[in-house]
Amino acid sequence: MAYVTGFPARQSERANSRQWSGGYNVSPDSQPILGSVPGLDGYWMAVGFSGHGFMVAPMATRVLAQMIAGMEVDMDISGLDLGRFDRGELLLEPNVV
Image (cartoon, rainbow, N blue to C red):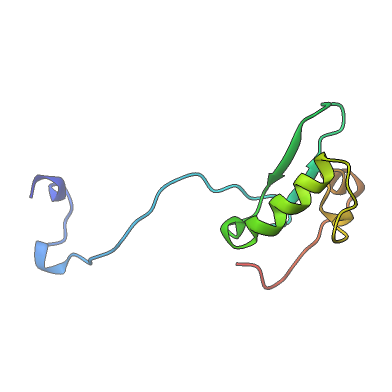
């Protein structure tokens, strides 16, 4: 097993583990950023889900589509705009992992 060369542990002491590698987007408060970007006309984003994007993707895309189409949005997402960081209005959640 050439890939183990250089590690001091013997083969019988190796721990079996699974690893994953990839992009992981996170915002400063671990909450999503939804909406348009001031100064960039036509640029919309749904980012910073801190690993929870797959779980909330159906609703996030619905809300974003409503915003882009100029429709009334189903729920209040005003606290999830990009400007909250400039305003110092971070949404700190103590239970987010």
